[in-house]
Length: 413
Ligand SMILES: [Zn+2]
Image (cartoon, rainbow, N blue to C red):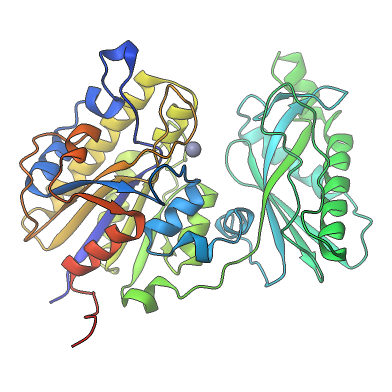
């Protein structure tokens, strides 16, 4: 007998007790009647997405959550970003994650997100595509994805992902020169191309009409493209072969879409899902329910928890978690009494006090027919610590889900 499953991944939802909020985490402070109910009736535990104390990036975390050991399969972030933006990568291509950013004339970074620019960024893409790179046998593609983000792909022979970022990752610091991180012509050519692209992006953007208008309105200009996370495509066995399931994913953020696509999931577009704080939670839940008619497994990713965390906004994070609970409630009302399993977890912890990813374990729940009732009453970091599923690693959750769904292969006779 085969069953269906939905895995809800709340980006950066895990947190730490907050001294300004009575020692509660945002998940503890939020009203989450549906997740509480699923946690109470199902199994609950703590998960080290990579390994105890290792802060995961979202791409590494998702690879792990889908059952792939990232130490074996991770080939840099940019490849996933490019695939998620709808580009087709060939073996050998090197892709970068990019930001529209604001710099002063001396290339000091004023805002890495150019005031979280959105649609206006798209209007500057044609100017960026006019850039000519003077590196033999090399071409490139540039695309805007969502908000202030974009992707750059270098096509050509003899390229390497072993090059450093131009993004200094910090406000107040100068834009960096990309340097080769290994010996050989390939890394040198790649770094040279990236440096040319970065400098020329400033030349075409600094006086772009969109930016002149932004300056007039007192907004930071998006006058340079910063790049980071060089990556290529990993070689892996896709989910349909690995587990024998047909899988789909609902995710708005290019990076996560890319990981889902690279592991063989069908991407489902939900036009009103933005990847931002204003995403359409009920449209996502309904899309997940619809997709279960044709798929065995559906991944439902929500980015907004991580956005609120990076902003250090406790109240916003609590609000987002309550919206996620409504979404889980929509799923619950439609699948209860049927043979659908629901898992809810986070891809990593992003404490609002730290405003970055940390290596703390994340809570998870798994609910459906035959799961052992935990009786924890609430879904949060504290109950997860004492949950009935114990402490597991990232790849274990999908294996547990596959086991309940009837897709696990017996090991031995
Ligand atoms: Zn994050």
